[in-house]
Length: 335
Image 1 (tube, rainbow, N blue to C red):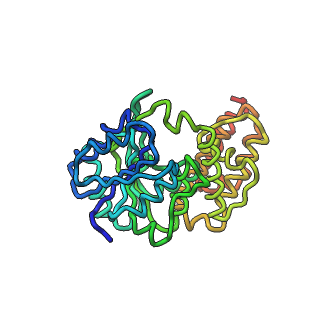
Image 2 (cartoon, rainbow, N blue to C red):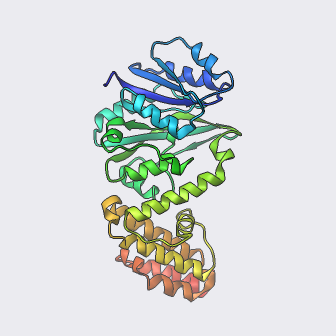
């Protein structure tokens, strides 16, 4: 039953150091029609005392009998939530005062959007602003090689999850959000609000520090899942090679360049490619990655130029004489 417009879902595990600040950042939101669903996942520190000291009728407190871990706790939260929208929050981050209002306003105005994130600002061990693309088309292109959302900065339309029985998968720990977005690709649209709405605390216990290897492995597994979804056959290590290409990793290695060519052409020719990915933006992405790879490996000489001009990818640009000439000159002089 829908009891409120928003459920803020916040799992807590041994988070006493920052928990009070996090809870306060939600309770002080300019938007007030929400429940703060806090699920204590078997904390052994003072987290429970902090939660119980926060007197506010909007707080719903649940306690797991044992430590179920994050993914099972998140899925439990989806079942327990009573809101039309689920807004994610981690127990060590800070939501800016207008976050809920801006995300709810956006979702109410865009009923075709099932997931909406925002920019976020990292603070703690370093400080910088991370910006994600705004439009669904650009978000889908980014999804080819990384998650296009900051998980604790998203709002999810709960109805989408219930209608299609979608929950976070324990097989993709530390990349469980990315994998969920991939499964949602054919079911809804995506967006990112173009301003910072969350302060993301970076510290020694953050996933980015403590679980890098597992996160990377499951990120690559998610890329493989996306390839399979669009009907693209993949071989071992294709996911990692493609991710390197997407991030602009250049290698003056003929086998690497030929593999890049095969992967990019296979992407364009995948049978369900344009069912999930926007044609115009995908072609621009593929051409850009292929050109920059070849442009930065012209020390291999005219071999690179010939591989570039003989590829299917070069046909994407109809008037490509100037591009071919630029690459030819670099290749001749092995720049």
